Length: 466
Image (cartoon, rainbow, N blue to C red; front, side):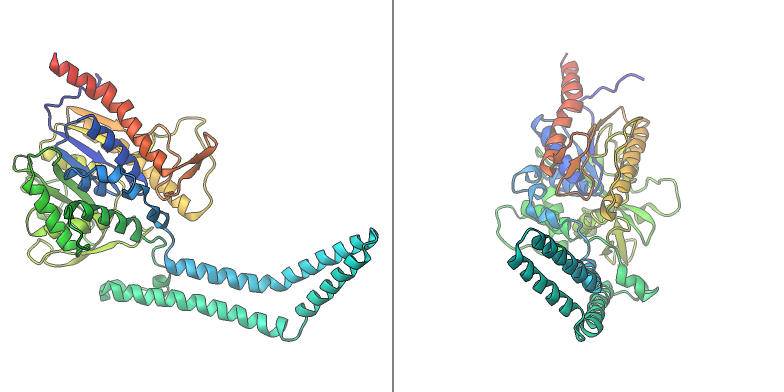
């Protein structure tokens, strides 16, 4: 098969793929494409890329890679951390465990002191030996004091366990109240204590703040409700269609309650995604495709919040549809789905896109002798599974795009040790050093030049000129 040829005359879309730290890699790649003057007609995305697409569609990509941008913010240290209730409960269980083994620790300490005292006596350090023996006697007296071992330690352990249970119960009741839905209270109360393990508040708030900073312009007004941000965003984009840096938008999330992918679009009239077009499967087109330029413009930020919620790992975002929409004011739970790039490819083909650039942080599938040691902590293991699915999803989207577009190009790292949840960077076993998120952003920039701009876009533009 001949290599695809890039042409700036064709309608071009960028598809941002991946979750979590993928946003940093995408920001670096978008910076390179912007500097090189690559013509882009549509920004499409799922997951962390929804924020990249939202900012890039209104000529605000510079906000993403600036030093004070979201991907270099210290607030990322709290991104996808363990839920507060689980963190506090973990500390409580650790305290209870230390209390249980405290007698053994005191015995070990006393035995060590006594051994040192004997050594001191052997080398004629009688004063030191005497003080150490006194310390040994004092430790033993504390351990076997009647109030300590049989009374205080057991009661302290019970108190610590009660505190842990109280924290979990309080968190579960609070979550149930926030749901405001009796339908979601069904099931054993004990599962509400556990819930989803990771908090999505960051990077959610960080990315919404970045979007609001672009929408408000020079204004200093505080961040309004999500619906107002969405309305102002869509008005800004539609009012500037045709201006440099303003492009069509196509973003996707997954609806857990409807068991459907939801696709939101803000397109110029000549590229409007046809509502009459039907994809394979039951149900009307209106159930999945949302024209965000109409009454549903207030849902833009809800799409962003749902996109940063990961399946199972974090609680889904609850979005209420307008009463005039297909879903008649229902409240549905939204999250990301790693396989969404293929759905985005399908929608872009319907919109008349002719060539696409896929951008994702997942490296190619492994080859022989490419295995590395596996992480032990649960969060890193969840990230490993997610990254593996993203690799397969990017490959599937590439194959699906080859049959629909005249040009399909991919920007991805050859090697990326930073997992979706490792916002503080990660140890790179292959190079025996620590890799930071800023390096991942720079890697996206370098890969865009090395894999697309210099060998493909520059050559294609020269051929067009000839």
